[in-house]
Amino acid sequence: MSGTKLSVNVNKVALLRNSRQGDVPSVVEMARLALEAGAAGITVHPRPDERHIRAHDVDDVAALLKDWPDREFNIEGNPMEGRFMEHCRRVRPHQCTLVPDSVDQSTSDHGWDVQAHSAFLGGIVAELKELGCRVSIFVDPEPERVDPVPEVGADRIELYTEAYAIAHLRSDFEATWARFAATAERAQDLGLGVNAGHDLNLDNLASFLKIDGVLEVSIGHALTADALRLGYAEAVGRYLALCRND
Image (cartoon, rainbow, N blue to C red):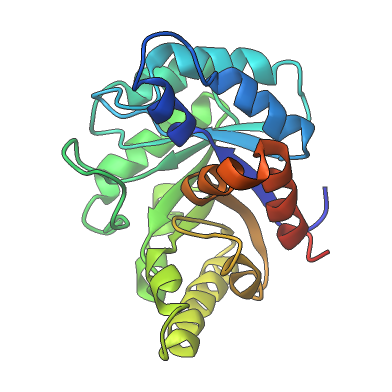
């Protein structure tokens, strides 16, 4: 798969399912549709209250991906909270994305201060890499935030892109984009891969991907909303076209 890879986050599918009893819509079925449409992987972000992804979803998606050996499973979460590390030890995903969200947050809203948490993160990264997982650390778009990341042993950063999505609609867009580009460049200079995610959508993704070398984007909320009008496979296909610059 050339270009930037797309990992489809299925959290919002789980959120809708959890509003009723039963398994409709099915997280596994939507993940399968995404893979059949060409997604490079599936992302889940299990939180301690299981308001969307539940423990069995982690296992079910891991089992699904055994039938897709060329695709990847990415588990996001805070290793300080809940069962994140338990999930990672159990299913050994291809990638673990460390996100500093707290239990009471509705969604992720900031990246790590890696310097302040370097001892803790270093231990977590070492364990995850022993499990065979690639490790990505969620960071704000500030080049200096990237400097301590190699010291804790992580392989990649994930740029937290909400500020970009907001700026895309405003006059300060170019300055904000440039800050993201500078952060990505700093990471690459340090030998780190660059992922991105949060509030990327069909309107702003192409401009964001003018940043050189973005390896992967993880998209769920906007893609799920687009799927309500386009259908799931068609929505995935449209995001893939932007990722490949078709």
